[in-house]
Amino acid sequence: MTSRQELIAWVNELLQTNYTKVEQLGTGAAYCQIVDSVYGDVKLDRVKFNANQEYEYVENFKILQNAFAKHKIDRPIDPTRLVKCRFQDNFELIQWFKRFWDSYSSGMPYDALARRNGKPIGPMDGHRPMSSASSARSSSAGAYNRARVGPQAAGRGARPVANRPVAVGRPASNNRPAAGQQQQVQDLGRQLNEAKAMIETAEKERDFYFLKLREIEVYLQSTEFAQGSELEAMAKHIQGILYSTDEGETENVDAGHMDDQEYDQVSGHMNTLHVDEEETF
Image (tube, rainbow, N blue to C red; front, side, top):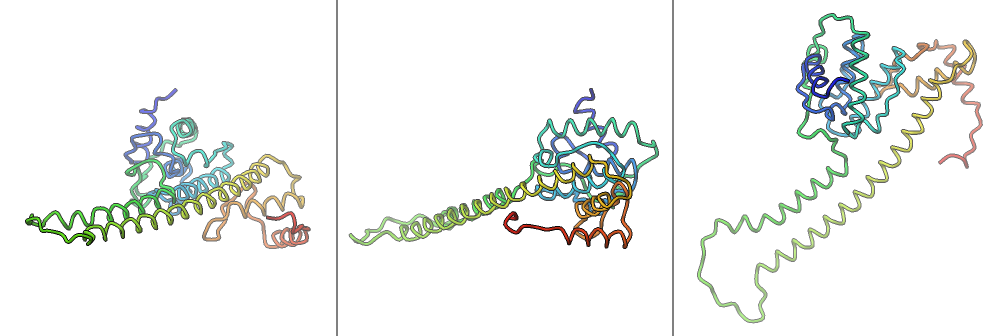
């Protein structure tokens, strides 16, 4: 078994990077370029090499899955686990990639930096993804700290003055800004809780639909349809939808693109399928 240090050294040498931990590979960018070093046809201009958000990691793994499908690489990957940047999940995958590269690489020189147009790739300030919830907590905490530090900073440069008598019954002037700060903190806390609730709901919905699409993808890849049949054409059409990118283009899947006539036949058949509105959600 190859050690983690040897694997990181191999990745850095192949891709001209400066990774220091296996967990940092969880962005998916390095995996995409390792495949490109073998086949030379991965669309690296779509890879987010400086990703630091979890949804950007997922986009990179989508590109990786498209490359696997195009070259019929039978190796399941689970982006929902890999994007968490945990050691064990990424260690197992990079070990597989090393064996894969040793078996299929042509051995020709590979200019990794030129292939990604000089874009930097490697560890960010922290290898774990920054979720939307943590971003909201960070900005709210910054506003809270500024509210606390502001009055103190204003008073640091003031010269000490002699104590003056304060009229009985008159509130001290410092109490008024303190009350305003307390109200501001309460408002920020309420906004933060609302944002966290919305983000948690959105993340649950995202994970739910992602797993459903993944189940469909696995079913289509593992099922053999009769060649030239209507079911095979429909499976191609569904795969085309699954592998389409944000720009509307579709990567080649196992059997390639459908021609216009075949696409119209499949689309027409899918439009005739009955959908019970009460069963949708």
